[in-house]
Length: 523
Image 1 (cartoon, rainbow, N blue to C red):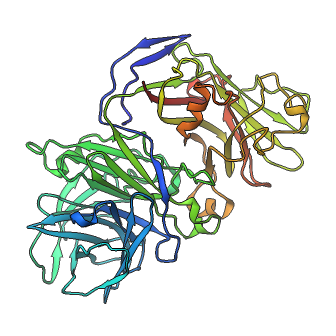
Image 2: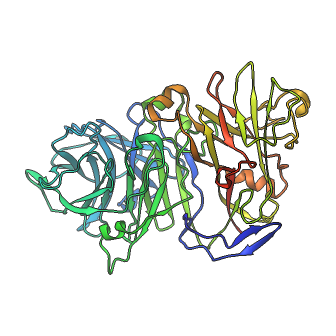
Image 3: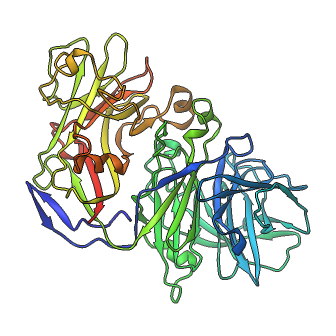
C-alpha cells in the first residue's frame, strides 16, 4: 500500500468520481505484534533482519544500538524474546543495523558497527556471524569460529563529509554489503564485496549517490533523507529505506538494474508505515523507528529504537514491533478535506472553560490547551458516509497543520454530540469531555509529540506545519458500520501546564491548511 497510489474514486459532493486505479504493491497499515523486551540491553533496537535458517522461521533477529555486543531474537507471532547471543571478545562502539544473507550455503547475520554521530571514526566494523539456531536459550559466539570481525574504511578519495551511517543491506544473491550514509544529501552508498575471509582493513567501494527524500521531520532538519534503516527482499527485487517518519519503496528489475541503480530511481512513500509520533497506551505509532526488514514476499516488520530519553517518560508497552501485510488486490483511497473535490463535510471547533457560552466554530484555527485555569478542548469530525458500511479499512492518516506549536496532544473518540455552534456549557451538560469511557474514550487513538523531557532531545518542540497522525482502522470501521456514532475526536494536551496548539480549521483561507483525513479501504 504505497503513497502515490491513486484513489479509484474521488469525492465530489455526495458522489464519488471514478479515477485511475491504484498502483501496487499494496500493504495494510502496520499492526502491533506485541511489545519487545525492555531490559537495558534491548532498549535501543535500531536494526532488525530476517532469519536465513529454515529452523529459525517465524523469528527475526535484532541488534541494540550502541556498544551491546549481543545478537537478539524475537518470535514474530507474539514478539516474545527467544534468546540472546553474546559475541565474546567483540567491543563495538555504535552498532546501528543488522542484515542477513546465505552465501554458498552458509547463512550469515551481519552486525554493523558504523554509527558516527561525532564524525570522528577512522574505521567501521562489521561482524559476520554464522547464524545460530534459535531455541529460546541464551548463548555465546566465539570470535574466529562463530563470527568474524571485518574492519573497514571509506576510500581516501571519497570520504563522506559526515561518516555516520545506519543502513546496512546484504545482497541476497552474493553476500555483498551495501552501506547507506545518513547525514549527507544526497545519501551515498558504499560496498564491501563478499569474500570467504578477510584480513587487514578493507577499503569500501564508493558507488555514488542515490535518491534522497526531502527531509520532513525535526530530528536533523538541515539534512536530507536521514536514512536510518533499510532492507532488500529475499528475491532481490524490492528494497525499502526509512527515516524516522517515512518508509520508501523501490522496485528493482534484476535483469537490468544493480541494487544501487534501483535506489537511484525515486522512492515511493509507503503510507502503511506507522512512524512518527509517540505512542501511549494504544501503541499505533512508532517513536524514533529505525529497524525494518522483509521476512517473506508478503510481510515486512518495523521496530522502534526507543532511545534513553523516551524511556524517562514511558514504559515497555510503548514500544511494539509492527507487522505489515501485503494485500492481494488494490484498495480505494479517499481524501476528506473541505474545499477539495467539492467535499464540505468537516466540522471543527473548540470549547473553552473561560468562555463557556461562546462558540468558536467560525474561527480560522481551532485550539487545544489543557490548563487548569483555561481548558480548551479541540473537536474534529469528518462526514464519512461515502465509504460503504461493508468496507474493510486498510489504513487511515489524519493530516493537521499546526499554526502555533505546543508540546503534545492526544486524540480520543468523542461519545457525545456537538456541532460548530457548541460551547463548553452546551456539550455534555457543561461537564467538559472527560476521557472516562462515557463522554469520550478512555483510550487514545493517537498521541502526537512527547513530554517536555523527550521534546527537548528529539525536537518535538517548535514544530509547525503539517503533521501526519496514524488513526487506528477500527475507529473508522466503527463509525462507518454504525458500531459507534461518529462524533469525531476530542483533542487534548497529554499533560497539564504544557503549551497548547493551534491548528488550521476548515474555515482557514488556505485550503491546504485545513484538516485532511485519508482513508484506504477494500470491498
